[in-house]
Image (cartoon, rainbow, N blue to C red; front, side, top):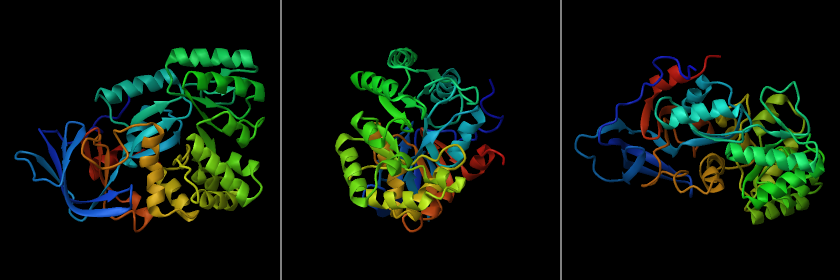
Length: 366
């Protein structure tokens, strides 16, 4: 299977070290911009910040540029190998795949991790669990029309070694509760749209790990109730996925009501995750988050620190020594204007550097 067109792996041939010289680091944790730093990368890790440039190191000029952690798109559907390199062109160094052909995804992931292909880190659910398999869907599904079949679906997904379980909106309440109980017992995350047969409050009680904001909108009737919901989510470590770009592109009249919920969420400790769906980019989602009332820093956190915390990973989310060298070099400060996340000068993925020229070659044609 051809994963990438010839010539797309236009990365810098790495010597002992690579240095991003004289760059401004964006600290997404506290919103600070730290200028005139040298970021030293060796292999796939950041080994030091602020020190001298090692002799013999390859140098990438960071003068006048801004460095942020690689971003995550927390809601995608993987369809083809060329799509993967396109994520890097968007500054996306990690994706959460919400249901695709798991065998193909496994092949792509192995090719990326072995260095044979360019692409993001992939976390995948495998086939979603639905009430019945629809002939209209593009990807495989597992049917679970009752609790017994839901538990069987869980066992099958467990044997496939998926990263989490994706539920579909048509799942019945009994099947959903059985699936959630099984997943909770074996410490496997449940994500996706809250089934129509249950409410967001039921999903909270079932400890579904991510809840879409549209489901929250249906379940709360006042600002106070929404704040209570978000506070309870924060207490249980449940994240909220707004999916604003998808709603905005669909022309939904609910977008202003969802904006209101996003603004209310900032009064609590609940974390938001940036997921753009199939027809938008993470940049679209971050811009929509800011339009809803988040600061640029808060929006950036939804694509960087928040995914790292969600995955309980110490390897990503910030620009610090010891972290994976998944980084995005920008031509303008995203803390000043969130749209500057589109001004990509280069990307580091697992320590490999992709210049603006090579990223343009990787971007999918429209």
